[in-house]
Length: 124
Image (cartoon, rainbow, N blue to C red; front, side, top):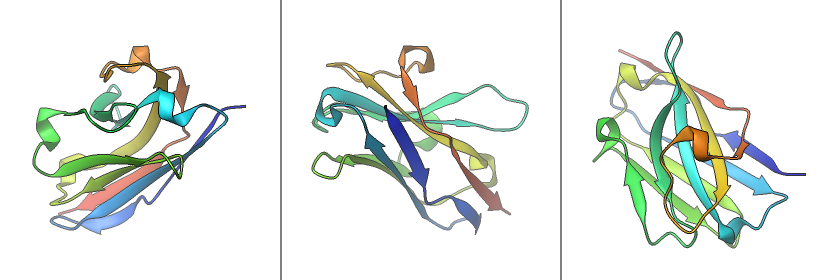
């Protein structure tokens, strides 16, 4: 059974930082592209960042470039999202997702496995 468990969300002020973690079990982690997505109330789920199997390639949404960094530790079966200079518009439920792939995937429809999400709220 594949499980993705996010943690690290919370309530912060604008300009603060948070690091999200996603612990993965039940799949061959080093064979999976990992992604972070977010969904704000009343909006569609959107791509945030993704990382290739061995971490050599990453993609970020334009809205988070220069502020968010995705990384992974294949020895720990964990993917991270370091979020700096947070803005109120970053408020959303953040989800991690996995897909067996040799490339970096950015479309949520391409991902097969999802976590339950963690809430990030940024106050102004």
